[in-house]
Amino acid sequence: MLRSFKRRNALSGHQTPTDGPRPEATCYVVGDIHGRADLLDAMLGLIDAHIGGTTPDDPQLVFLGDYIDHGPDSAAVLDRLQALKRDFPNNVTCLMGNHERMLLDFLDDPAVRGPRWMRNGGGPAVESILPTARAPDASDPAEHFITLSADIRDGLGRDTLAWLRSLPLTWSSGNLWVTHAGADPLRPMQDQSARVLLWGHPEFETAERGDGVWVAYGHIERDSPGITDGRIALDTGAWNSGRLSAIAVAPDGTHTFLQT
Image 1 (tube, rainbow, N blue to C red):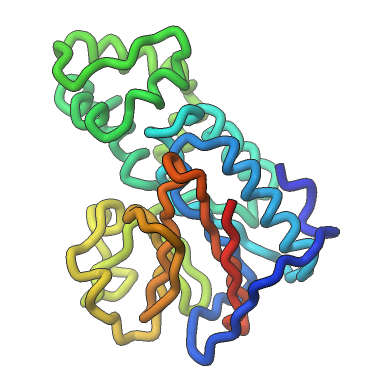
Image 2: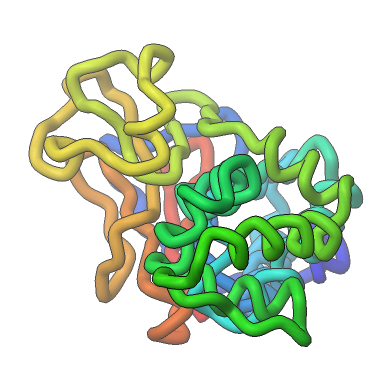
C-alpha cells in the first residue's frame, strides 16, 4: 500500500488560490471508494508519489466514508483501510459514511433495515464478505435477513465491527473540515447533527457558510472533483466510473487533485 511517506516523484497540477482551505499540515482527502479495492490501491500509489515529490511534514490521510457497497471488493477495502490505520495511527483517519451506517443499522435491526441496505447497493458487499452467500432481494422474508445478519457478523469479525462502530463523523485541521455528506451551512461545524453529516443537507451546495470554513465531502456523485465557494466535492462515482478522486491540500492553500 503506502510504502512510506517519502521518496516518490512529484505530480503536476498545483494551484495556489488567493483564499481557500488552509489545514495545519498537508492533508490528502480521498472520496467514496464503494468496494473498489483496485482503485484504492491505485490511489495510494498516487498519494505515495505525491508525498515523495513534495516531502510535506507530518502529512495526514483522510478517507471520507462509503467504503462498502456497489463495487465488488468491500471486504478487501475494509481490510486495507484497517491496515493503514494500524501502520500509521497518527496520520490516517477513516470517517463513517452513510453506507457504513446502513450496514450497522442492518446488523442492529436486520428485519427492518435489511431491505433498505439491499436497495442501496448492499448486495455486492454481502457477496464480498460472504463469498458463498446469495445476496437477498429487498422483498425477501424477514427471517432471511435475520439469518444473514448473524453470518455477516461472523464474516466481518469482532475487530472489524468494533472499528466500524468507532469511525468518527468529522475531521478538521485549520479551516478545513472533512465530512461524508457535507454540513448545514447555517450551523457551526461543532453543532452539526449526525444525520446531516451522513446524509447531507438540502442547502449545503447552494448556501455559503460565511465563516471561512471549507468542507470537503463526498456522497453526491459528479463527473469530476471540484473546489469552489467553501466546498470541495470528491465523489466521482468510483464504483461505476473507475475514477476515484482525492485532493492534496497544503497549509499555504496550494491544492492538487489526484484521480485514478
